Image (cartoon, rainbow, N blue to C red; front, top):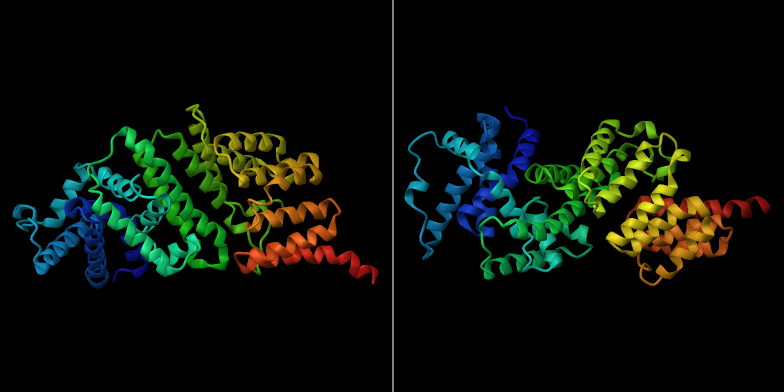
Length: 417
């Protein structure tokens, strides 16, 4: 008997390679996805009794391909089928496919799958949504939550993206070096979005928390294809460093524990060691990018055995560099937090005040501003900021964290009564 958890893991691991090959065969996203899903259903029915095959990806490709061809014949489409020899089963088909996979350019199939989903003819939102659905295999409800839209709206977005890919006559050949560079940024953004969905949800949503592992799996896959790309190394290091703190980010009651208050003995030193080595390798390429800079900031936290040992001066400089490479009000907000450690809350408040209009709907802006105002002794303004943060909280844990800050504000008044 094959464990169902193992089957699910095997299907997930094989998805990019198998779906990429089916896309090459059928040159149609819907057909490839339907064929892959049919193969997965058959695997769930047969593997528990017969055992998993030697090469799950090869098995899924073979079964999915035959299933897709059957569907084409049933629909009686007036489209020429591939040569019959491509579907003949004259020998041990699974072994034959596995041998060809070992020798073929299977990385091209994975690249094709990723890059077609992230084709520049599509708007950025459609690129990322389609990649999340096709490459990662996330469900429409999961993707909708990541984008903070309704399921029906996300379903329409993905359908439109598929339609545009089909109508655009997108080439199924592997993109050249120039095209790869253009699309790589979107691919890495998609992977980081998957990670952040899980990272932000934490233990409040166990289903979404698995996104971190999924994102790490995808970025490792991308790194194998682009082993000399420093920004992919930087993204890998960044996610490993952030994921290393997973065991310390929430207390036993599910409440948020701030970075400076976390039990650093609970950080995963194995992941940290791997990340630091990856970051050092990326830096040696002398091609700094946003992911490398963010990883370098996380690395300074990871190298500090105690919060008091954190090099806030270096972190502030790195945020200044990040503002130049990828300017964003959120980056400036993070720089303000680092600046407050060096020059106090007033200097940080002066830096973030101009961001109020742009970040008025951002939970963390009001949470940070409230904390800085509280440090500066401006309790009334801090209470207003915290109240605003509560209305924008994305989870019960975030809401509870802000209420703790409000309780701290109310403590002096309670003593004087």
